[in-house]
Image (cartoon, rainbow over all chains, first blue to last red; front, top):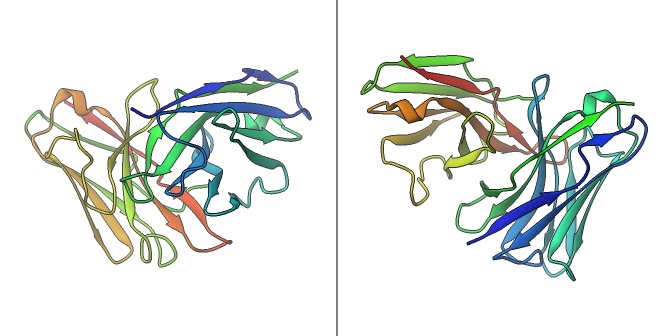
Amino acid sequence: QVQLQQSGPGLVKPSQTLSLTCAISGDSVSSNSAAWNWIRQSPARGLEWLGRTYYRSKWYNDYAVSVKSRITINPDTSKNQFSLQLNSVTPEDTAVYYCAREGGTAGDAFDIWGQGTMVTVSS
Amino acid sequence: QSVLTQPPSASGTPGQRVTISCSGSSSNIGSNTVNWYQQLPGTAPKFLIYNNNQRPSGVPDRFSGSKSGTSASLAISGLQSEDEADYYCAAWDDSLNGFYVFGTGTKVTVL
């Protein structure tokens, strides 16, 4: 079955870059029917979609307007994974971060989720 | 920030029917399909309903979804103790170059 395994630090200093990775098993980051998303959750902002990467003969990215100037989501086909980089973080970026698969047989729903990573932005 | 509005809480006794509403706009629910997620404490959300009213394999048929215009709803019939969780509606929004939006969430309590 498809599984997503997240990794990355749980503590990031203000103004630095938050970096997380999501390793995929049971599917391919280059799938022509799936998209690979990052979502975060905090008490203040609830569930917030950050962006996605997907392959449809070429690579595409979509980002939320709220983080568009600071975010990069990259696929890594050699390791079958994708990553999140969020630059210039502030305490407002403190949240649980999830990766998730969109598509498969579930339309545009996020049918598979990673386990979540609690990231705290603090000096 | 959420643009899909849900009631903060709902409750019922075991066996009762509980309905959760989700109010959106023409740019999200009005023009795209609605998905629902269940989140148990300390866990990642789990998808419950997709394409407005489709249940993935393994989801009990006591969960049902519907959509009308710019609103959607999730019904839980025959409420069980294990249904106590947070529930979120979600949909793509066609404004601002497109983004995925989640609802504000509803905490369901089984009395």
